[in-house]
Image 1 (cartoon, helix red, strand yellow):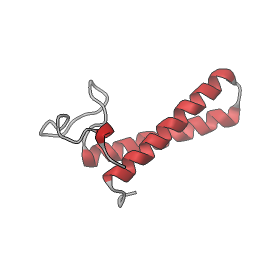
Image 2 (cartoon, helix red, strand yellow):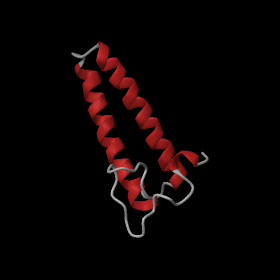
Image 3 (cartoon, helix red, strand yellow):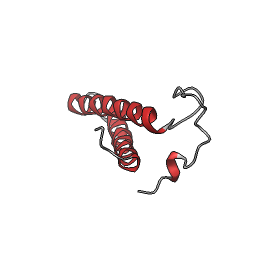
Length: 86
């Protein structure tokens, strides 16, 4: 994972977030689906891992207490995560 560029890593995070939302919606309607819950938990852990890698290397993805910041404060640096071209 160390060789991923910023935009590749961000794209993977976006894909995992989409999958997590999709599984969340499925589980809202099928709360006893053990395979879906297992998939959701696996995706969630991978998403956490990749976000940590991204934030360590490229700066915070969100603000307001979701991600610690290194010195100097990097939240205002451009481009913003959603402005990344991919």
